[in-house]
Every structure is written in C-alpha cells, then in structure tokens.
Image (cartoon, rainbow, N blue to C red; front, side):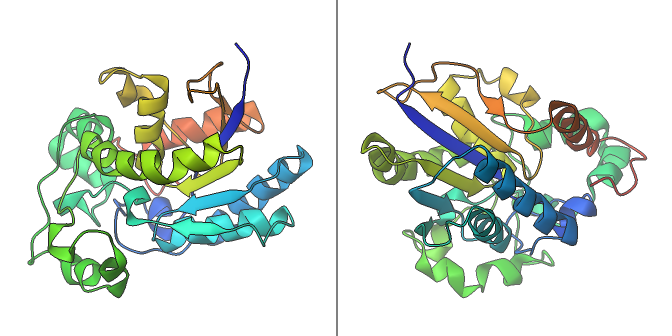
Length: 261
C-alpha cells in the first residue's frame, strides 16, 4: 500500500514532575532543563531528516506548547501555525494528581499502579475540592477558553475517556488538515498520543497497556488516503537510546525507583 500522508506524534519533553516521578496530568508544568534539550534535539533530528510541517497542534498545557516552540525553532520553522485545544491535554488522573508513582506502587502494589497508568477503561478516583491542586486547575482561566463549560470538564479519566474527548477534535479539525495535503505535528502528551495511536492502529484494549512513549521522541505514522497506517509506527532517533527511555518510563510505576526521569 502506498503512503499518502505523514503524521507526527510527539510526547512533550521532560517536565519537572516527570523527573520527580509524580502524576502531573492537568497541573501546568514547564519543561525541565533536560526537557528543553530533548525538544531541541527532536527538532534538530527532524530538521536533519528534511521534514517540513504545515500545521502544529498542541494541548493548552505549557509543556506541550513549549515543546512545539522549541521543535519549530530548531527546524527554522517558527512561522508554522500552532493551534491549541484542551482536547489534546494529558489524561486527567483525578485524585492521583501530584502523587509519586513509586510510592503509590509501594502502598497499592505495582499491578494496581500499572492499571491506573496504562489500562484502557479503568478510571482513577476523581479529584474533588479538597485536593491540593483542585483550585489551581479549575480556577485557571485557560479553561474558560474550552468548547465546554468549565463545570463539565473531567474530574478524572480513563484512557477510553481521553479518546472519547479527543476524537471529535481529531475528526473535525485535524483530519481535514491532513486530508488537504498538509503535514501535521501533534505535540501533546503520553496518554493523548497513546489514545490516538489506539484509534489509528486499531490496538486492542488489552494491548494498549504495553504501548509506552518516552518524552521528546517523535513518532512517524505513514497513512493511506483513508488515514489507515500502511506500515508500523516508527520512533525516530537512536533506537538503543529509545529502548532505554521506554524502559525508564515503564519502571516509573515500580517500587524503590528513586527519581527516574
């Protein structure tokens, strides 16, 4: 089958809470120093391979937007339009937001933490007004810009619910851009990218548990005219380093991890 469209997915560069191994979710975090370097190196890699973008989509969280800026700057493509939507936000981890994954594994078991982090349809406990980050999230005026009232925004999400809120935006906004012949980069988050991969590649509810995306590594999807993949996804870059990075992400939910990035 012939490849007609190239789509690039990118989990943002490392943020401070990635380094601290905490559930970041909808708490707004800037990139760490290492995250800035990851984004710049990603842009340089894409530049070296001759890729050119026509439109970039991000969430409304700073780490996603910063990553897009740094990638475009490294590619000498700062002029490329960027469109932001809450529908590309990271998964809402509810009451787990701010907690350390390794400590959670110690208290609840590694298997439970893996289910909370990776499963398709298991939803963590919802956030409520007593949560230390509730006000910081829901009083943030960025959420007044959404296409739903602030009181209807999620208080927790499974990966399935991430896909449910992402799909209308994908179908109505991003798909027409791709089908018109534009090359699109989606600079988003681990779970919004995983949800989209599940949809595009037809990954089963069970197998999606084992799909891991490291920070700052671009994923190339080659699609036919119906936006079906014509070959397996390709994580671009040094494959040995990518496998190490994937292992580090997978280890974040294990006991006695320390501060793995």
